[in-house]
Amino acid sequence: MDLPFHGKKVLLRVDFNVPLDEKYHITDDTRMQAALPTIKKILDQGGAVILLSHLGRPQKKRLPDGRLDTERFTLRHLVPRLSELLQRPVVFSEETVGPKAKEKAASLLPGEVLLLENTRFNPGETSGDPDFARQLAELADLYVNDAFGTAHRRHASTAVVAEYFPKGKKSFGLLMERELANARKVLEQAEHPMTAIIGGAKVSDKLLLLERLVHFADRLIIGGGMAYTFIRAQGGHTGQSLVEEDRLDVARKVLSTAKERHTEIHLPADSIIANRFAPDAETRVCSSYEIPDGWMGLDIGPQARQQFAETISTSKTILWNGPMGVFEMPAFAEGTKEIAKAVAAATKNGAFSLVGGGDSVAALKQTGLDKAVSFVSTGGGALLEFLEGKKLPAIESMEK
Image 1 (tube, rainbow, N blue to C red):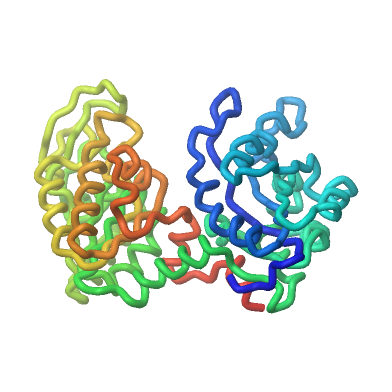
Image 2: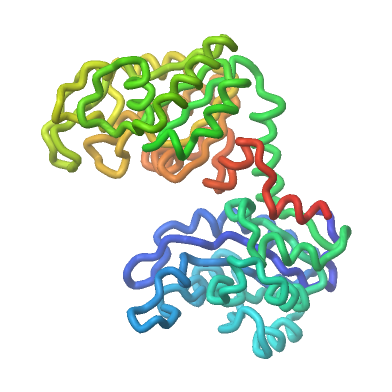
């Protein structure tokens, strides 16, 4: 991030899509904290910062009469906490673009911070409207994108706006640089053995990632609901567990490719099964390949936890994305927490670990281990697509 910030107004796209409670108080400011180094660097070098972010999906969650829910989705809720984090006042613009936004941006002095209203209040944001992007670009001298979590979308404030700034007047922020460097470390500079831990409900959500990982990971640990599609593909009896019948051939293809390339596939030997999908369901431990009718696997069992932990312990590079069970229910969260502990222990012993995905990160935080891994990605979908080998629009537009 090497731009001449002194005396310049800098349009900075951040990801402040933070969770709010029913009284609109921030319940987790991780994403705001992650943007602080970039904001502070610009301010310390004599620049003025104009912050851009989205919050939620206001266009899709309108009020019953069709109006935007501006009370729920306004970024005004973020101003007190942001001022506290930056230890300086933050000016708020109730417009994203328009005469008021233009006036506030024009009067901004070096060292000052302006937060524009939710970019998604304007329908041109998600459609990538060039006119909306142009109006944003006119507010500043330089553009910095530090919102890796939105890099896979061709939105006006992330990809299109960058095209209005020539090379030398735009750059990635410090967080974005770190996200890309750590993802590339897994993809291009992995020390072996490299273990990928992939969880979540559906094979279809992670299909491209699985197909790519099987070519360069040494071990592939598959947990969560998607494991039962692989177990069924091998002839196992999975009861009422989540199985994507239309993905059985895909699972067999991944297993076949893994065998050809000598990539180890680790599936859970046993599961915590339940007689219904509920937090207070009756549970028992059972072989993942012999789940009775009427029962479903909702977490990896004690044997699987131990076997997975042993595999992780001998790894030099670890990628973890997705939970091992129905993590939001405490009765089925232990498997995911045990994986968090295993990844942290391997990191302590010298492995490089990259963790991404909401539930994986939540498990690290709940076990107090979010600082015990090498890097926690803020990316989610963007990280997945980058690891799948896709071109991310917000990254491509910076290179034009």
